[in-house]
Image (cartoon, rainbow, N blue to C red; front, top):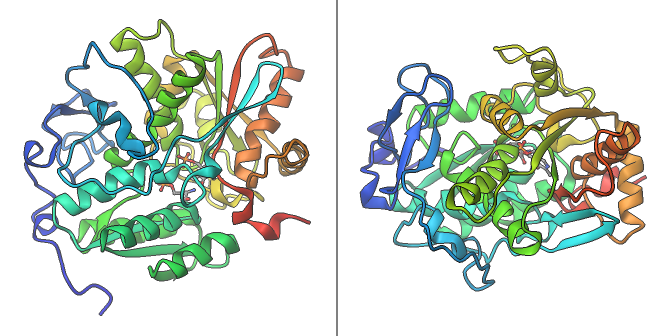
Length: 391
Ligand SMILES: Cc1ncc(COP(=O)(O)O)c(C=O)c1O
Ligand SMILES: N[C@@H](CCOP(=O)(O)O)C(=O)O
């Protein structure tokens, strides 16, 4: 049998006292209906309207000094994170902010331990999984979340179950899940179908979900904003590729917290990029729809953002709207040209990450942003993960 040990806490619906596992400084707030409640480690939806809850720090420390330390990884920012007793880390984070051209910087997340930004959140999520005593973790994935869950699961002695859309995962990413010893299930269909299956396992109490429905994982990802702040304070624009839509929200939340603390006086414009063939959030934003406009069969060369039903769509729209930001689409040809241009400046990223540079080129051309402004591209994943996309 695939799953041999069910967690009692998950069977009980994830009800684990927040304080006991280091969540005491948080409240859960629904971004849709405003309902507030005590946070839990393993329950993420609003009991009133079913939306994904936001994890909000009830009180922000006033005298904080942000300083990344390699030895601590993402836990360098523990004052602003959950504080479980035992921390899992692979010394994630601390990625370089590389100057690309006048006013333009790339935050190279490909230099995380498994080659993508997912590691920042996985450190937090897997630590909490340990704290509540589960033995199985589960993710659906286009590849990077699986690679990260597999590595951090191995680090923590947990079994990682990864559900991958059949034939749609880049070779390097698949190799990572295999070598870290994950239980791999191949799902017919798209990432969105795999996520439905993974959520069924989570809801049945068979494994703890570490997809971005997990608010604690997103807490780790907000450290991207803290590190950008450490390097250059507040840029004018941050451009982020959008798939399941958690990361753009997490980065905005990081800056928003710094503003509440009083370290900065504005947040950057959050600019989300989607591929033309996989642009549910862009369409929802463009048409001002109050419901997500799903894409049934998403298509793009950028497999990491080939997602038709982003679960964090509401949170992502909040980030874009509250920052005066926008969404933009780029086509596959523009993505591959942009990737080549980055590579010829010495930076090798996977196609999804290159969509940010393609968007920058388009937005400069259309005078939406200027090179007198400071813009950060979040280069989410390393190019070595997807060697077959190099022709
Ligand atoms: C390399 C890469 N870039 C971007 C994304 C999109 O991030 P999000 O799903 O948080 O929108 C993903 C996967 O989610 C990814 O793996
Ligand atoms: N691109 C992602 C898709 C899953 O996103 P998640 O943030 O919900 O884990 C991946 O790498 O699998």
